[in-house]
Length: 313
Ligand SMILES: [Fe+2]
Image (tube, rainbow, N blue to C red; front, top):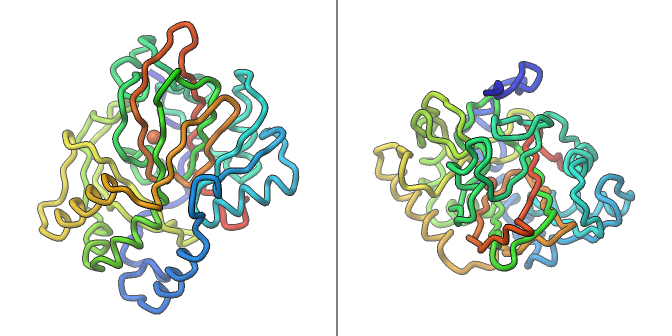
């Protein structure tokens, strides 16, 4: 088994400051929250086409393409690129990511030697035991929710080489919108999910197969440098322990209802060859799909210990 990460990849400080963060995500900062909220709702793209940017070569973006992708990431924490490159080119995700300041790659043990995961239906290397490597649906989650604070996944790139004959759709929700809707409903709910012991993933239960100790932490927390909001979440119902606390239970129920309901903020798309998603680890799920062994669905996934900044780099 490969070691999960070298020291060089470890984040410089513990990002879990949760309740102490100043700014709009501080439960007491009502004015800052109102200003942030107004801007968020004004700027958020109304549909998936508003997230999408055609690019000639994601490995070498033009300044205009880069600015357009950075703009979507600033407004929605995610952007979708559409490129004409349909060859299985594994250099695309890291080359694209580098242009947005993402360099510290997470290498879970199911990733390939270069740290990029080939997400495809396979029985090789123990992957068949883990849902991403099957054709089954994947519930709502953020990537690496089972990781310790030093290995937070702040951003990832998902690049499509080949799509399934049918299905495999992703639903996407900006976690800042999830926070906003929850705080609007009842500020005590977001407060509950910022508690440092809100959610525990028991030992040895993650979707990437790495044996780990139990991991306890908040659901919502802020980046230690930028103050940006992030989220650690899984909709799994087994192998997860929520804090036995009425506000936490109410907040989890709220999230479940939100994610199960039609919403103009939930964007749905099926990645096609040459397309990809660049994001600050937004909430996402995946529909199941019939796989064609002659041309299996294949996506390259690169996860990072860096976040896409407001300027895009
Ligand atoms: Fe994921």
